[in-house]
Image 1: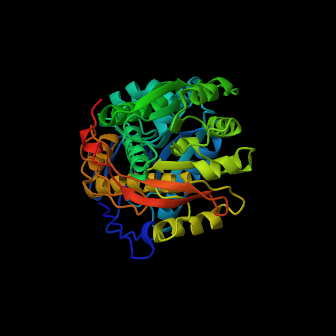
Image 2: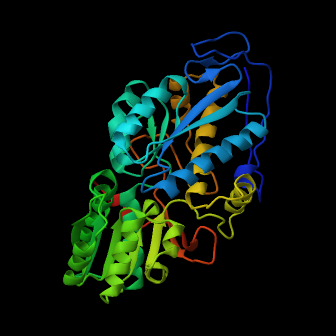
Length: 417
């Protein structure tokens, strides 16, 4: 059996991957196989290649997010391949663009599923909901690019980072510490329907219950392009702060619209809602002045992070014409977690879907240098509970810088749905 271990050297972090290959493995053609010197496999292993997939949005409202996330996934596995592969196999990443359309995602999943070991990315809460049953019934190791707590509790489905409600609770605690909000304050929460926006709303409503705030619940459809009604609701409510859990164009519309009407209150938002292209819109100045992004992974090229800077250097070399976002880091670090699970499964001699899933659930403390420390042992709990607060800075690549390092509000452990 191949034994593969990974070490992260100080000052180089994620990209310092050393593969130590011992012995010789017999490669499978896709069916389950065991034998002297081999690991057991079932799906996604043919000859010398192990195949995983990324099902993402490269042409819809989350195109910048999905495209750079997939590039981050690819960057990690390219590095692993250059260092000898995973368990002696070269890893191939099959990428498909669902354009944020659920039926397209279902069709692409049906095409990919029989030929891949698992999914290093499945982007979009509606897409995850549509495919969740099949993923679970077939035990397909899948990393979802969604932070909805609704997807906790599945052995096959993993969320890297911190769930939406925790990010919102952490973000509101920062506004309270600054004196922006206090008992009796009003916070407007503009959100998409479904597992992104409504799950984030659980966090704001919980925080409000604990701190005597009023939440103005404002829904916005994914296809909306006119936000005047939502803006007017915020103005009429005289909110003290705003949360936006929507698409990047919606963030621009809400921030720009409220600024135009003189409502210049602080705005907190989450990773899927921000993209550096917003800094080229008419709302750019207002976004820079008012918006902070609360999430669980460091920004592209983050100062003081050897890992983030190493990823940025590798990205610039691999994609010289690319437009990086924070999701390069997220995609790389998520693939890193998948790689840790594959390594553990290799050492156990079982690269079947069940074997990889079991190996992932054995990871008690995963350090990527991009996320806070994560544990994947209990699928019913968030892998991490901490968030980082990012400020908007148009002068840096990716548009975001760290304002407050990883932390956890004292209310996070008390959160219940």
